[in-house]
Image 1 (cartoon, rainbow, N blue to C red):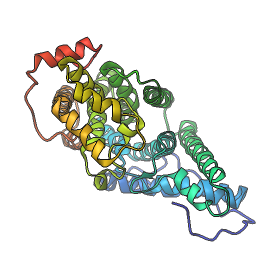
Image 2 (cartoon, helix red, strand yellow):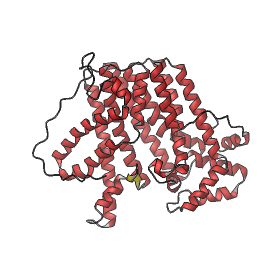
Image 3 (tube, rainbow, N blue to C red):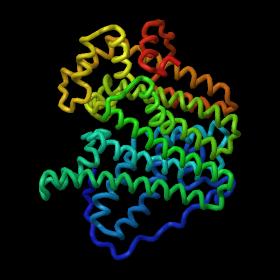
Image 4 (tube, one colour):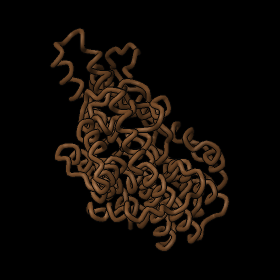
Length: 423
């Protein structure tokens, strides 16, 4: 949300804190954001403090450039990042580090700063995503582009205010990305980080950014050309969430802990399973969850025409069954920005009635079991591994085991539709 702070012209910036160097703390001295035990107790709080200090410096730079830019763009970007969500990616990074035996003061410092960079990257992704989807809200508040549009609605014509809102969202996302990259680059240049760890950290970061963009493109392309198949939907989900949201944060934690290749690979496989389950859960929540819990309007994917896995599977099942009523509902509703609540309820009935909802729930459970199996194969610190398992269960929303689906005709329907879902 836009700041209500009065901003005057700055004549001099505040004193700048010298950057902390990994490894500069004594053996028993905690890092600036708290020692390892303090972070264990409250990972989001520790990352929040790291972001507070980091963003204070960035905002000081921006106020020195121009107070209007600082108010309209930089403060919104910083405020969005500080408010955060569940801090999923930093928590995964942290418990991966701890499960791999990491936690000395230097590793605490680098992990928290890397986690802060992840949150800035997530700000970039969400601000741009909301603009591309024309989403009105995020986390129960106006989306950034909508907030700017509202701010200038009384001083600029409607189309101009909307263009300004859209342009500001682009720039705010770019600013968050620049801050994220600057944060990681600062770590790579610090002498306390070994050359091998710095190289591996950079390689993971480089790959993750490209994967995130690729996944987002497949998502918007699917909306535009309506070419969704179960296999393509899973591919987009893998790039957009399985890798970016879960696998890569676990990968980063393992790298920072100095884990060997076998342990790192096992964690990555576990993360990919959990990350795909996370996206499938998010797809179901978009249709069936209470908007007060998700912080965004229900049915956004349907209105935007996003070929999510539940919608694509529902269409495949309806086609195989010759269910013309269900196909008609989907043809009418998907991609309709003016969809009514009643029409959205019809879509929910189709997704449930065709068996697509049960199929997706069963697949989430299978992925969860594979994730746990992979974690069991890794040589991890038991207590931290337990915390990591609990976190992965939280994000996938899996409440226990469910039996494998026995509906062979449905598996055949997916295969006929070009699906990779039954694999």
